[in-house]
Image (tube, rainbow, N blue to C red; front, top):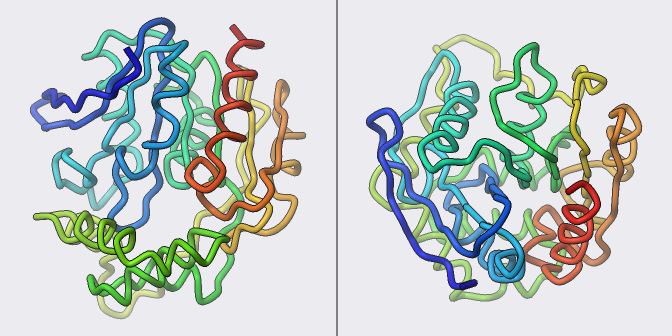
Length: 275
């Protein structure tokens, strides 16, 4: 069955929401890090196509969707990576194709280039996550969200190439409602707190030990991404021993939403090759 079922499981005492569909080798989907995103919003146009061939698990990472609204002020990203790994243990996944968008992809890169990767990855696909985020009005919209509808419209404008998305009142409202669910705004905003007098932290860097990545890896770029520079995906992929890159035309920072057919085709072809 390709219909996604909403489920919740306890992972080390933390409520963890996820969508599950299909049967076969596992595919784990990790959404981005923008205010209001969730497994549903991030992957609703991909799950059914992938579930025709695979067991698909789309996880709400900590702080998002129906998962616990918690933050580790010392190692927030590390906590999320450890939670993803433990989630895989709990749902019986010992090897999977991992696919991440934006923050989800960055988390995968950080884990895969570490001394001791935790995620049980058979392959990795990074979608618009891993390059150097540009400082512009679009990244400012993501980082300075004020929990208002106009603020959410600016986020949607930053994420998509097609102006139809920010002009779709219902779509913006859906993301807005997700962003103001109990604890959702607080959990993500809290991660950006800093002691008075400290300089703002630098945006995530793309400099990593890519030669450590030991599994087949695909890096996908949106041709009209407003947040990442042109050519970043190919630049990173050539540093990975078994890496490749692709560019999705007419897509911004979320190609899996804007051009789902193209992304689904790429993923299924890649999974088939590496399996």
